[in-house]
Length: 368
Image (cartoon, rainbow, N blue to C red):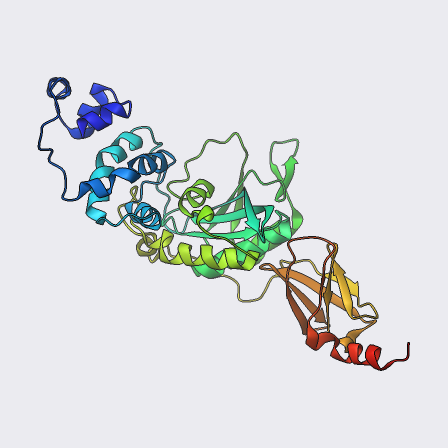
């Protein structure tokens, strides 16, 4: 173990501190030849092909053995979790020596909201998406969602989903360097908030804070970097945005929020019960802008360069279009009349047979 730590670039002082041994002892052991019979765990050779990967991932910030075990099992590892934990123990101490200490928030006090960019392959096309992450400060519970833009209406929609997932809201919500939420500072140095966000905060009874890009704050073990390094997008292939969110929601619920955190030595779901969150207003707040469209004679509406079908009886009428969770929802007055998966490309036409059956029959029966 000492030889391995030395090869990793640790100094004698660092190794001694990590293992709780005297520097002279470490120096003497380093001068000795490796013993013929190493005190390794049974079948420790099973872990050997994955050590470089584990060390790399730990340096990226992933110190959770449950997550790393799942990743190397996906790559073919067939050993025990104990073997992995024994290998990670001294390395974790080394990496944590460089880390910023975790600063615990009070229960129910604050939540952090942030956006991150990510490039994925959807239907074989390289696509830039945005990663929304909301983190409860005390419990470190997270909610995350992939979206196609960072507009304010998208942010509010995601935040509402997060509050519903958490079962309430904290007293303060901190927005990290988001252009959509504020237009800058006034003459007194106060944040000029977006008026719609102000109404949203008033509706759900929380106060707002804004941290710019120069603010050096500690996110604990959660946030954009945590999701990027722990939810391995490269392991999956996706056809639709909704598939991505289904996968990340499962990971979030079953892995991320149910794994013991190094900083707190508890699972987020265990600390979440002590958050004491404020109940959210049961009266809905309209988070999404409505886009009005006139249905063409061939029963199509246009949205962001693509066309989607609606039932033929609505031809020529005015309808409302909403975009939610990777879907296009079409309403006539209060009635939902069509739902489509949002296209990832451009200049495409999407028809559902049940929408245009009568139109097609009329076209077929008409004279040329």
